Length: 290
Image 1 (spheres, rainbow, N blue to C red):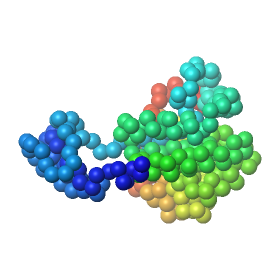
Image 2 (image 1 turned 135 degrees about the vertical axis):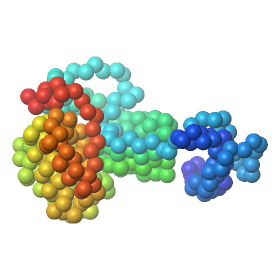
Image 3 (image 1 turned 45 degrees about the vertical axis):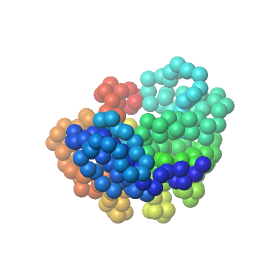
Image 4 (image 1 turned 90 degrees about the vertical axis):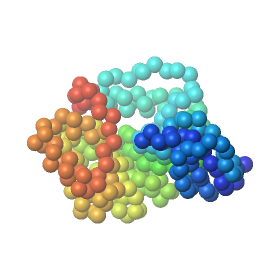
């Protein structure tokens, strides 16, 4: 059944708590919030749900995931990777070759679980490289259409195994944008691709050519990471992409002294560059650089 057709035109949610503690009745018309009134006893016109004093929250956002990598629903596997970032990447490549369950099936299982728990916006990076081509991107683009109306699935083309050091990846990344992937990704322009200038120039150039946003994985720590953040800020400003760039992880920010961090953070704020991090321990950053 069509989700929109199944939704009542008028709905009243009775006696729910807002984050500020108020108990309210919520009127919804044609899928939009119409009013919030003090909770009243008794029923109301049209369809209604009883909140019973439960907390009512906005839809949840999962701002960084990799649906194409999930092993959700598969037998448990122990972690077989070594301690370095490159070990994780190579282990992931081996595991991917061993899995015979299609990307679309695995991704759909995890996404449906996210939706059931309240996630209405999910940003997923999706691997693009010569070995898998565009197949994972195509599977997640198809999944995006299937969940439309229940969840906004935002997709980022991601060169997990490097872009410049993995010939053919850059061209496939750009092809994925033409297919409809929402944002251009990148990964450790210096630490993995070994040429920050070329890597970032291509990422920003492709984003501008196709009118896309940018989301770059940056694990490099210390001065190397901070230098690359400065480059990203320069290119954001030069290309008029303020408010359209995100840096994922950005572990280096957790290791900088305030005198170095504060002006860099202010520049990021001025350009609307978002940071999405998991804030790992410093030891993890050091291992990833070996």
